[in-house]
Length: 199
Image 1 (cartoon, helix red, strand yellow):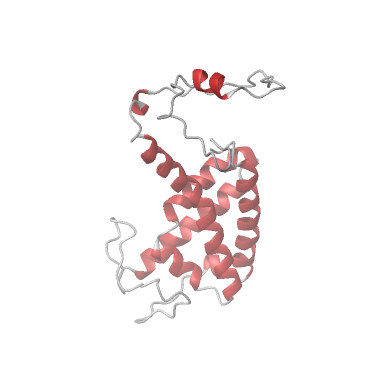
Image 2 (cartoon, helix red, strand yellow):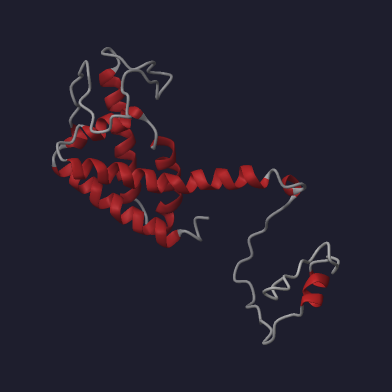
């Protein structure tokens, strides 16, 4: 999936790099926002009332606010470190994995929302969600595939530089296609529309 989506990932990574640059330019990355009894949120659905992003810190409260903001700060700093390390190829997997792990953390959203500019907040949150989506898709595909009989016992081997396939100049007939698929060619398996002449 990383290989197949490399162009998309690189595009999202470039966007994330720019969003982080704008976030850091205002000094937001190194400032711990103060605790508010009622957080001024740009996203009404955020619901900062009660959450627990880290079991070692415990539920969010006035007492744990600074610890959570430092926790969120470290999450963003890790993103920045990934983008500064190695090349695009080595960045793809860590970016996909880290953004997946933080994409729904309320402490991270709260920390990012402390930036004064709405466009920067929206951009950074969107980039994290887009990058994290790849791993979500992977888990969804695996979950769906495991419902296919025999899939759990299937071995997938990555073939490097497979030989180029030579496609036939002519299409297979319906009879040959059904034979290739090991299916019977009868009225039960094939329905022909007399009105449109379609299978």
